[in-house]
Length: 323
Ligand code: C5P
Image (cartoon, rainbow, N blue to C red; front, side, top):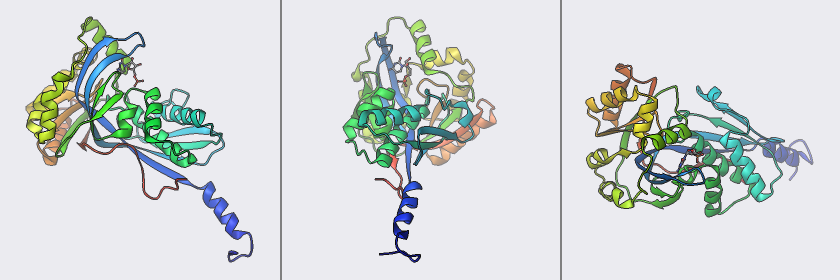
């Protein structure tokens, strides 16, 4: 049917709508409830045994029409993330284009909330969100398993951020088995502006523990039982991170942050991933706020966030113009 201005308007309106199309995707951050690090393999990665929980701190990626593949970072920490070929959202888009043979461009606008170089997988969340956003924007419709394979090429944590919830990770941390978890866990995160580069923390670990054991999933049985039972007190007691000692070595002030959160009555306190973010588990949402306030008041962190988990993995947001 012709539009109000005569024949051809409908086509023009459709073209305009296509040109202004937008797909928005949100991907969560993570905390490792347990992280056990084994030997360094010849590929430069350590063998891990880990239990991931996705938490409600999100990166949002919007995909829009563009002639080339490009990225813009927004948010208070945006200037600390490169937009060159090291940018993980950009790499995700290029990898998907190469894999599917799509020749189109895309403009990815990444709104950052997860701390940069904080051990909560912010860059990996950008990669997971960008993969899903471009897949929906270009209409490539890859099966989930294929997206997960591409995710693993981009980084060890990226597959988990596509999946979300709670999972056991082995291999580099990218071979995942979903784990049952009951209830909601309330966290306070103590953040430092000076992040820790993940490779440096693993290198420090190698210095401190030259001959680590291959991680054994038997070590996670008690934690997985506590998660199944929905027992935050037991989960708090079982939080564990083999990289914590290395992170503390590189950032000795973490000792005080950990102590402040413990003294404030956290059910458990642990360095998140490769740090330096400190994750403190509260008894309730209210208690997590109190833990965050205690870290702020003691002046042992630059900022705080509260969040809960487990939450879903990367998802296309309602209202998106997916193909
Ligand atoms: O996979 P991703 O790029 O996130 O990893 C960043 C770095 O962390 C790797 O280059 C490696 O130095 C270290 N790493 C590791 N063993 C793992 C995961 C990461 O040594 N299983």
